Structures are given as C-alpha cells and as structure tokens.
Image (cartoon, rainbow, N blue to C red; front, side):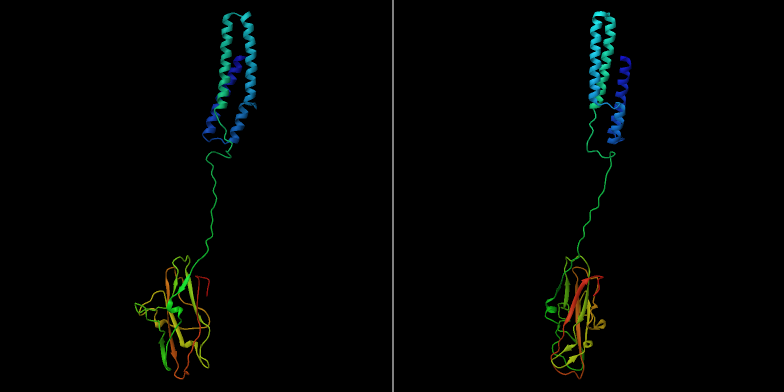
Length: 269
C-alpha cells in the first residue's frame, strides 16, 4: 500500500542521513560506507530507485484517472495526499543520495597518515697546507761537532718567538684529523751517516717561546708515530726540531726526508 511505501521511504531517508553524517565525521571509511549504503538501499542503485518511483507514479496517475470518473472528490483528495507524500519521501531519498560525494582518493580511515625516512651520506673532507718555512725544509745551518740540541732555523722565529713551521687544517674540514711523522733514513752525506736518533722533534696545536717544549721532544724514527690527534678544522699543528752532533762526527752536508701524514681521527697512521 501507499502507507507502507511511504513508511519505508521515510526509514531509508533517515538511515541515509545518519550514514552520511558518520562518513563526513570520519567514523567510517569509504569501504564501510559503501557496504552500509548498499544494505540500506537493498542492493539497488539510484537509477533503480528512480525507475521504481516512475513506475509507482504512473500507476498512481492511472488510479487518479479512474477516480476522476468513479470516485467522489473526497476519496480523490485523500489519495492525492498520499501520493504526494510518497513523492516527497522519494525526493528525500534522492536528496540524501545526492548530498554526499564519495571521494575516489580515500584509501583508509579519515586522519590516517604515513611516514618515510630521508637519509643522506656525507663524505669526510679535510685539507692541510704547509707553512712557507716548512715548505722550505728543516734547516739547521752550520752546526759544531760535540754540541747537543741545535735549533732548527725556524724553531723560534715567528712574531711571538714561536715556531713558523706548521701544518694548517682548513676551516671547511668536516672531520677532526690526526698528524703522523717519520723520516725515511738517517741523515746521510756522501760518505757518512748521522744516526736518526740524533734528530728530535715535538709538536703542539699552539706556539710560543716555550711551546712546543723541548722537554717533550723525542727522536725521529722510520715508522710513522702520532703527533697531535683530534685536531679540528681551523687549527694549526706546530713543530720544532733539534739536532745533536757527536764529537767525532765527520764534516759534511747531511740530509734526509721527513714525512708528515694527516689522516681522519681514529684511522691510524
């Protein structure tokens, strides 16, 4: 009957309104929304509901036509009232269906989020430059046999009586570095040798008339040994050298090669 149809449409409209409200509030995701909507509409599409409405409307119009000829005006008004009520309910259903837009991009519950990790590997970089006087070599000038701890020429000749032989760590270095020192051999002349243990050295990351101190000096070796370690960008590594000459050492010009190595802290000489 029209009464049952009207009651059914009213109930459908109410349920759809509640469903739309829940979906808009994020209580339901798209999948559950569609499942509930399908159940409320009994598996029908909006087009099927439209077709059913047209069919019922046609039946009603046929009934009205018959009533014009066979029924009293009172019966006609009552039937028309019910028919318009049915139409209003169908309009409510269609309006409820049209009132919600289903976003195709929704893949989960409202408010879902995800995270990813960004990663970059930055390579170690450092640069070291030798001072001009260190580039010129370690000069002892003329020394006398039988003397100890003859100063290298540049041990005390900067503005503060500090050493002018140093290695400068670049300001843009991004890792600390360790300094290492060795010599390739004894000091040799054309015919004679002066033992390497007669050449001593010391280093520090600052310099003055007393630093680096001779009291901390040690003999050079052919193996690399650490000077200062964990030296930061912008710092300098200062060196001093001394040479002792045994009394019986033959005259001559003696030389060897002193090597400086700089490595990232912790990697070893």
